[in-house]
Image 1 (cartoon, rainbow, N blue to C red):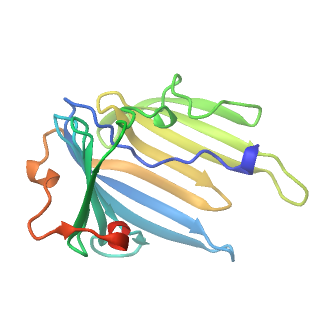
Image 2 (cartoon, one colour; image 1 turned 180 degrees about the vertical axis):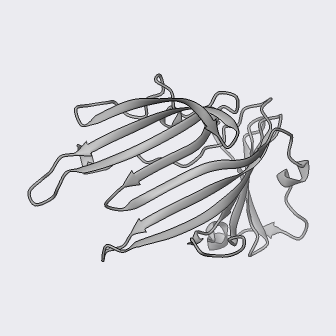
Length: 223
């Protein structure tokens, strides 16, 4: 198995497709296995939206301990217009922004993230199998699920390791609404779209706020 690693989940990618508006909150629950074997539990949320034109909007927040009370601080805000291919990043702590244009539009539905029999994320081999999980409601949204199980064979003193990935895809929203990844050596992550409403977001979220200045140098990638 090259590298002995499972495929990366990539998170929940908001596809920039028109005529499927929504707003929601992506809930992220993560565990991290520390070198001493202790497991740290973390969480965050991500405000997200897409309008009828296909413009997408995301608010990225820091990971905080699972017992943290309140809303995690914002790292950056991103929005993208597929009609112009223009993107914008806002950095609220610095009140700065950066903009640009992508050379090629992002794939509307990345094949490595689609939970469908025809959207396999990686070639299956003797170490990997895929299970069809059928259809169920994820936070009120009908989605079809696929589980991929990868077994890394035992080697020397190391036991075999089983890694799992799940993808729950909504045909209606043209995107995954839940993804799960578990690696017992490193930890796990579950991302779920919650509080989804099927209306256009406020157009103001796609605007640079008053008082923001262009980011310069390292400020453009400030975390």
